[in-house]
Amino acid sequence: MGKARHAEIAGAGLGGLAVAIALAQHGWSVRVHERSDQLRMFGAGIWLWENGLRSLDALGVEAAATKRAQRIESMVARDQEGRPLLHRSFATGDRLLLPPRADLYDALIARAEELHVEVALRSTAVAATAHGELELEDGTRHRGDLVVAADGVFSRLRETLLLTRRVDYLEEGYTRLLIPRLPEDSPTEITEYWSGSRRLLYDPCTDEVNYVCLCCPVGDEAGRRVPVDKAGWLESFPTLGGIIERIADGGRWDRGMRVTTRAWSSGVAAVVGDAAHAQPPNLGQGANLTFQNALSLAEYLERAPDVAAGLARWERAERPLTDHIQRWTDLYGRVASAWPDRFAHRRSQVLETVTRIPWVDRQMNKAARHRPVGAR
Ligand SMILES: Cc1cc2nc3c(=O)[nH]c(=O)nc-3n(C[C@H](O)[C@H](O)[C@H](O)COP(=O)(O)OP(=O)(O)OC[C@H]3O[C@@H](n4cnc5c(N)ncnc54)[C@H](O)[C@@H]3O)c2cc1C
Image (cartoon, rainbow, N blue to C red; front, side, top):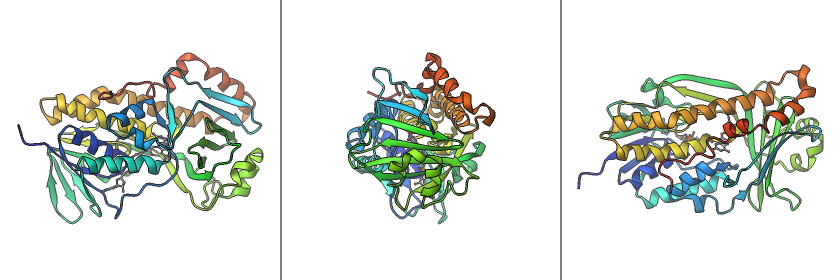
């Protein structure tokens, strides 16, 4: 038997751990470098669609990641008067589960440990080369048959590989938090409330907590304040006192970002996750795509004559779907936040009609209904 191939990965977020697990399952030895001093996940919820769930199943973590998650049965967006704006329908076989992020992250960490993935904390990567070298801040260099930049949206490694095409700072940002669950809360329906340029997303999460995401333009200083300006949000959503009053201090605000790359790899170095395709979270697919791309990366490397050829094939096969979802999640955000005021009275009617067109439904759910390469 030949020597196990070795991978060096920068970043132990959802993407870095998913790639590490996928490779380790194929017999690779893997080391992940994480700049933080501990593995930590910010604690709001996360949408896991069928494609992400199938990928997580193949990575051996689905059951643990979703043990407390609610299963979502419907999604609706409403205007401030409560009128429905759009529905996302669920076809037979569509699944959307909503666990706390921490459950997902803990499941990935446990699986990585089980597979003897080495995680080096306080280990900051500063550069990668197409020949398989990873350079750390302390000056040491590590060599791998494969190097992966999974260092997030502001990836430092991506540009050392000259792979950045564009990094867009978007006009919207998001405050995410968990609120206590009450018996009268819907356990199965996600509702997104729209009021002017603000949105409030209510997501059932576990038996104890719900996930709330407040979305507003970056220029809306009161809207993006943490701790949340509850009086201001109540003014925008006067019927949602029951949710807004439950918001406690804490939460976290992030600006929406979009990353496009020239390519997903250079030689034997690849970019994965937000480093490769960060996107506004309107369709809840950023991490789901990351999981399916991480899983398939290991599959393509297994089948290819060498690592560079495998990475090129992987991108050719996987990127079109990721690009498609990036465009549609963008479009969703534009419709939600940049609808012209003079047509405000038509928004409800137009969106209700458009989102019921089967073709539109297929475009929005194209990733969710995709069967990931490597999934059982
Ligand atoms: C508001 C919001 C809601 C979202 N909701 C969903 C959702 O419901 N469903 C979904 O699928 N996706 C969602 N996403 C997207 C999802 O969160 C991301 O796609 C995913 O977390 C990306 O993971 P990552 O590992 O690529 O990046 P990150 O999570 O950013 O991880 C990068 C890791 O690399 C480390 N690091 C950075 N630089 C270095 C370095 N130089 N050396 C070593 N380590 C380094 C960081 O400390 C971090 O641990 C959402 C995003 C946002 C902003």
